[in-house]
Length: 413
Image 1 (cartoon, helix red, strand yellow):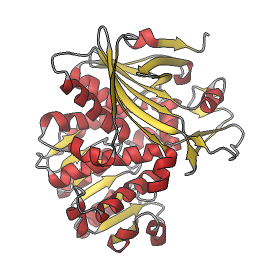
Image 2 (tube, helix red, strand yellow; image 1 turned 60 degrees about the vertical axis):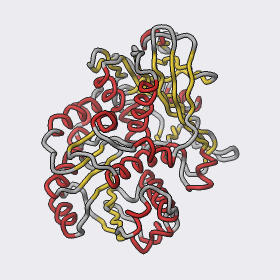
Image 3 (tube, one colour; image 1 turned 135 degrees about the vertical axis):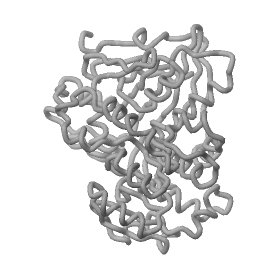
Image 4 (cartoon, one colour; image 1 turned 180 degrees about the vertical axis):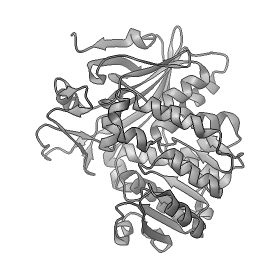
């Protein structure tokens, strides 16, 4: 097994799950992991003792490498010489290039999100639309990769939310929803007594990824299997979401899972994200739609956090709504896994995809999570639930309507 981007925060969370699996004889991947060599690749690799505290039970199975993933010739030679059978990609490397390397060698592949180096390096040429352009490029080449099994975008969001939506729809097969909203409410912030830097926006996501979604992109939603965009700054619009006794207004951001799900089921849909009030106050009046923050610095939150992360789906029907979500407190997950809630949830999605590749007989090809669930026989939900427990399901007796009916324009208020 090879993990790309091993020195990053998501890889850290994923390695803690592998360490847990190595100690648990009932874990779905315990036996497969037992005799595996785990190769760790990063452009800025950390020393082996860094990994000692993350996965001490696996330390003798780890081998570290420093490779620039832009050099696909070196990577391909490495994969061949190391006898790698599966790649877990949590790096910022180009997804299509990584798939191409793996496909040539018949190496299976799991990743957390779509990346495209050309679009990243030419951000001004794709201003407003980087995510949809990444998706279009990926779909152009996707069908060519038939010499491997690949599951893409299986982090918490996207990935696990696709499983939630299909799980809810399968529970009520005679009722067709009008829309599917993916929702996230992240209240993670510095612990009390910890001073925040002035004019600094803190995020539990990688700063580059957050900037792409929150600043460099226009608000996107799906309708009639078509991505549509609102010519507004992301943080100037908010949309109401109600999940039982939880209610919030979130910004509309582009999202892979929205695209996959709504294209698959012909639903209206969008991704609504609600951060902290601290973040909201910084963005109002400081964000310039040129891909920059005029005065603020975006920084990753440290490991010691208060708050929680909630991610889920809201299915909209003509006269009601159904929801399913998972919520996790940072303090709880930090105690057991030394990571924050958002990264643990994302790592659980990667774990489920890895378990499918290792244990289930699925055909060759490249699958998004919704395609995996609809086109193959697998136990993705069972593997996922081994890590993430206590999903909350419920129903709203009335509906707030389709997406634009929920909108509040903060710029004009």
